[in-house]
Length: 146
Figure 1 (cartoon, helix red, strand yellow):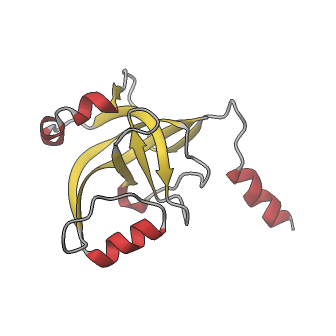
Figure 2 (cartoon, helix red, strand yellow):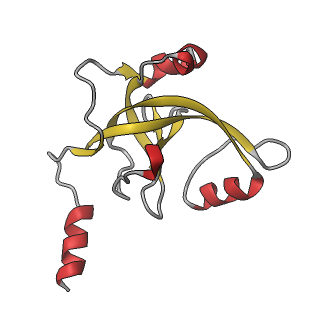
């Protein structure tokens, strides 16, 4: 019973809670995700990590091992994964404001992996063969606020 209460307390967030995962974020202003999406190729070539801000549109409903971040609610964005599968976010992160630092990567997923991601709540644009190619941010650190 105590273990269950401890787990529930980790998953619950109060309105003033800031949730930090991974490495500390840079001490500079984050770029709105919309700015980055206007010139993804340039930001993907940077040697310095990209530091973005946006809102969580959806997240992995099984473990919290990814999130889809958009510039604003209801807009198209990118899926964010976590470097080396090194941390997870709360399962109730949808709607939270997010800042994340990481590297922009283009990934190709076969049909089976797309099926798996969609079963966890992802929304991907499928190719004719059921696979998907997506632009992602592999984050080394994130900060979520309700």
